[in-house]
Amino acid sequence: MSGSFSIQPIGRFSGDSQAVKRPKILVQLHSLFTKLTVQEIACFSYDDKHEFHLGDSSLKWYYPPRLGADLSEGFESFDKHDDSADEHLDSLLKTIIAHEQEEGKKIDAQVVTWRGMITKDCIFIEENHAYKQASKQKQQQQQSKPRRWENRGRDNQPPPPQFSPDVMTYWGYKFETLCTLPATWAETSREYIESRDKEVVSNKAQYCSVVRTGLGKTILCIGGEVDAATTTDLPYAPAVWDAKPMQKGAPTNWIELKTSASIRDDRGMANFERKLMKFWIQSFLLGVPRIIVGFRSQAGVLEKLEEIKTEGIPATAAQRGVKSWNANMCINFGAGFLDWLRRTINDDGVWRIRRQPRSDTIEVFQIEEAGHGKILTDEFINWRIKLSLMNSEGG
Image: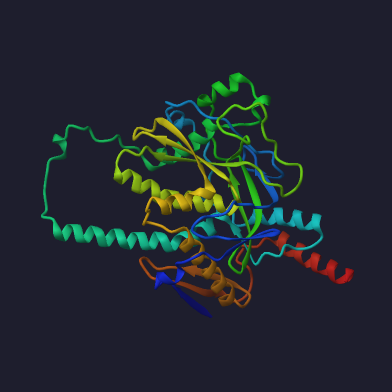
């Protein structure tokens, strides 16, 4: 059994976006987006050894970093999590089990996955379209302009310093370390706050939020890392700091932390506008209301901070005439693909989603007629059997 989903013609995904479901409310997204409200149903943490714990023990708090910080500092001592082993959905499933045990019923989601997978789903249409447009434009420029050879070494401006991909990836984790505290500002010593640039950077500890949401007709349960919580008002040192609400599911002032090259020309602006698409969808899916962007030099020096409200990104992009992506198209494509996927995967076993390089088609086909390919844990399967028996006996 198999099926294929064509992304062409992409025009069918344009127009006002499909409904985005939230608990107790239904938000219809238009070119101007309404205020986001997402209910967190559960959470879990990874500790400094990347070991799983239920609860918010690894939650961090935002406090602005010192400008001029060298984001490369400490790279040699980076305590990096080994992500070579596929962790599948194990931690997310453990958290769902605990939630269902507390509620006495299973969640109503039709798709359970990580935020990153839904992000890829929503931005695929735009990344593919942008790639083709860029390739076409480049080809036209090459055909219309004579080739010109020049000695770049004679330029007055020195070439930008070269850094390995590992170092540039490290910059993002360093920025998070510079921006976060292990407790609220009132509970953290001045010494710690002022010496964050000397802290060993690690990406092992994480706080992960689990939310119920939806795209179009598909109800989702997704998990994703949240960088930090923050105060009600920025900037930056008010008298009252937020605490995570005691009431389960109440909104929290989450912050997403991102780095980007400082914008110095039109090309830099175009690159940042494309980044905004991913920033927006990642934060939108978990209900993160604000993004703090640390702009850095080509040498990895932190130069500027900018706060961006998630809900305002699509409208701002549209008003500025951004052509590289469209928020409504992202949502419509994601909703359409998920609806088609649920109708196509109509049997047990293990299925694979695949797109060949530069193909306009996404393929889905069954690779195992039975089993779960180690994607579902035995613990989760046994719990669902037990829960089903409990509900049938109770009925």
